[in-house]
Image 1 (cartoon, rainbow, N blue to C red):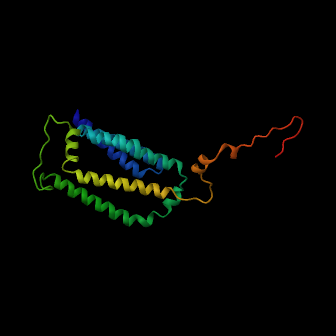
Image 2: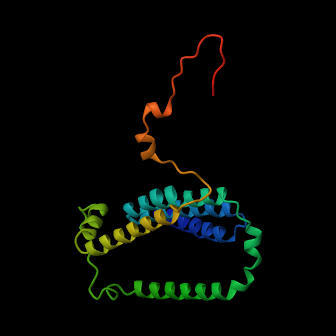
Image 3: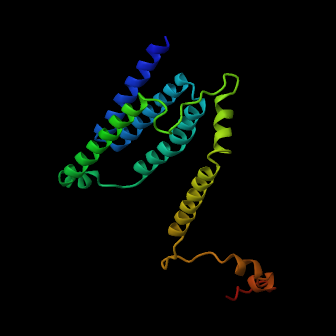
Length: 202
């Protein structure tokens, strides 16, 4: 049963990935990408990596893919114009594809020889230690500086995105909160006792 589920999820991931690239409608491409993420999460559950499976569902499906979907649906992008000059980029795309295939081939060869990448034999996690607890122990002990550096990079990216989006525009009148707070009621409202039968003076 486990082997059947593995081959089923793997097949759906491959088909979804191919449809993500081959779909002409970008909205359909994002939907196929979400399908690939869900089935990849199923593969991670079969392999015993619950934390990575939850990351795929919460972070990638719940945030990244949905963000892609909203951006594609809300922006008025002329995809016909974008596809017009795609032929001139085929050599670059083919070169990148060959480089990725070579990396995958090398990774598969190295995976068949355990203990050669890190220079020491693989150490198995104890059976009574949960997967998330073992991952947290590694992150906050051996890979603490790398983990902190990744957080710093994300912080810099977030600040850069805020700075780039918060630009000064000349065609709008921004709200001056300090001026509104300092304004006194007597400066904003004029109380006039108007006699009966007379008009209002503007």
